[in-house]
Length: 327
Image 1 (cartoon, rainbow, N blue to C red):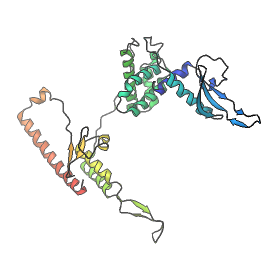
Image 2 (cartoon, rainbow, N blue to C red; image 1 turned 180 degrees about the horizontal axis):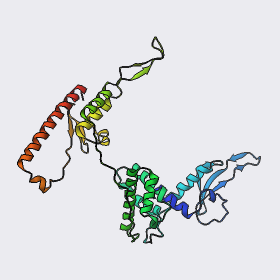
Image 3 (tube, rainbow, N blue to C red; image 1 turned 90 degrees about the horizontal axis):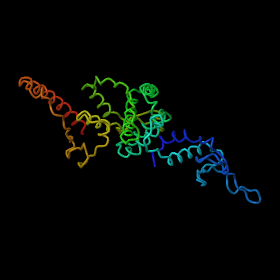
Image 4 (cartoon, one colour; image 1 turned 90 degrees about the vertical axis):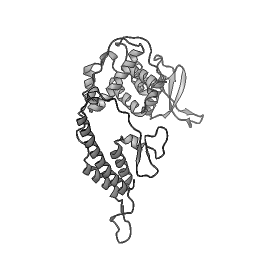
């Protein structure tokens, strides 16, 4: 069973559309699955005992959709899902003139989808690629079509990430021996690097705003009726702790949000028993280059002195802030 989104475009291109295939069970429209509106059934007195319902006819069998008369759009979606599940992309060597991009994406999802760390985002990227490229042949994928996709996407960074998946899918397809021709993906330029970070005073202001913010509650009775007055609740203090951990460790937001207060295997961040320090798994740095290893002793001592002074100042400032926030 393959991924649904890439297969739908492929099957709809080869078979009739769902609305065009609403037919009677006796009609001969080929072997494609199709919809049939089964008429309502009545008893001898003319009373309806079964409402008119859409069913999928496929190979002489009836597959229920659960859609009644007047729900043709929903029945079409059920038909598309049925065809997508049934369809399997062919796995044999062919020319890129005969291979659809939807087939390439479907094979890539079937083979590599289970290994993705974030399957939801992966499926979203494949869905966007299929929406734009699904109806094209592999021979139509070139620099011009990649630029058109980046323009259609409207986000250069997002388009680059999506096209990286398309490149991986094509490389997987050729690696499986399913085509031999070269298909090159042209990626948009990388965005400029980040040039500015929060200053110490800006970070402190942000922390204090989150720590001191109090909830405002509308009074519905008493002398202050209709006024919004502060309560004893501080709903943003968890953000202050979140920001402080980020300032201390430089860890990404997702890793901080998924951290556990208990130490264990696979836990990157954990608070100590005292609750005032943060344990962080060390990141292994790449080996130094030969030029850096042979720097003069004077430069090394000077760099170490400056780095020690900065680290000491930063540690003192943040430690005081953490103590005041009782992290």
